[in-house]
Length: 116
Length: 284
Image (cartoon, rainbow over all chains, first blue to last red):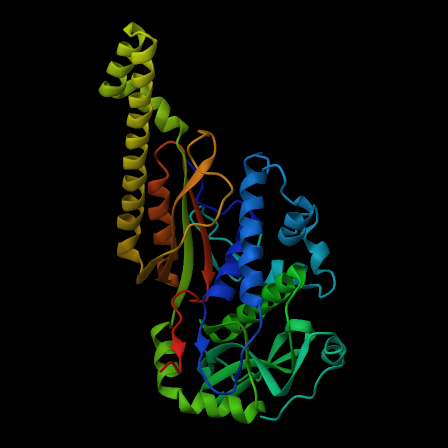
């Protein structure tokens, strides 16, 4: 039997990007400041993460001509994911704080998990 | 509640290019029901290390930080850091107050705390109702993945039509064999498509009794289609569901029953604030 646990933390990041950039409450009010090109950058970033994730996970190679530096930069697939977050220190904090379910959820394989 | 002074860190982060000045900007993370706690600050810092605090009116609180500029986000790493930090703040707020109404990333209101309070008062009824409707509810995300190779192995041995086509290929000349091979391939693709449909329907039917809402999500982009490799797992279905925390275990147990067939894998993440089910507020 397969295990319904998520298997990759990068998957959580892609999901987080999708939810925060595409979903969530949209506030329509005169006092709301419209923000520039975050959405477009988000789409590019999510696509890069998803593509890299897929290729890396299955041991596949990118098509000839793919700008790998750009893809890896966008997806931040490094040996230490905290590297890119060193400036704010958010990665290590996130890993301990974005998993409120860790304490409260049962440890059965059926429990959803985040941010591992 | 008084305005918090701009922090040193924030002042430093404003000294960059491509910035738009704001009139007493308030970056909005989420709105919470403050019945559960009287706290006015959260034990975490927000984007760019800004102090995070609550602007409250009549037991509804907006979780914000002060900002004086809006940055044009042109760097993927920075965007990723901010998204992660944003979610971290929402998670801490969720721990203190329960399920929040999560804002879309980069929602900034001008006009200081008075403007945010005014917005809360103006839309009090809809915000209050939405918060009540999400009480105890969280979003979970489920992805159904499938490696079709075990299925192909099985149908190759068990499907009568495929067996027949295979036998006819062995007895046919080159030209006819080519056509039979095409028919054979088409039959396999038909059976695989039927199996995809069955798996997706099975997932939806299995979890529907324990979720309050279900929203199918677009497939994530991948570099490859499923026609040339039988070893990769393809994405069959991706859904966001809204479910009571008390039903989380039941939901997981039901997902466990779906992974019985060969090659099926479930990704199950959460609990998340109800991003996918969040309303627009103030829409005409």
